[in-house]
Length: 99
Image (cartoon, rainbow, N blue to C red; front, top):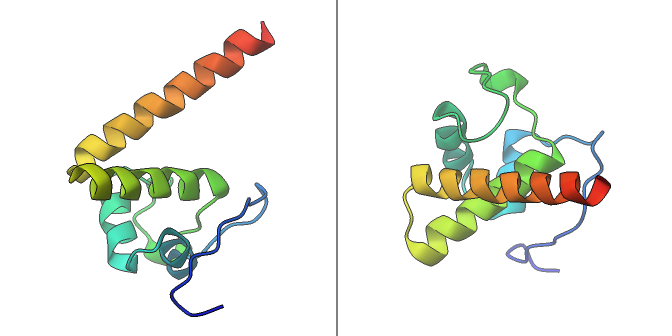
């Protein structure tokens, strides 16, 4: 495997990633993640970078945002809004499926 290949997989909820690991998993620079955390689009809202850990939900959200920004030249705010809507649709589908 070369250094530029992106490997995808499923993370279990107990595993968390560092800033650098999350950036690598998304194929972006760490600064991309930092900007979205500071804007409130990713993470738990903590501004203390030394404590940042990213769960599978954060990774999925970041990848979706990156794809939207890239494919549609969307600004981060719009990408985050679309991802919010996608997550809400998924939540509602689960709710209807369990009823």
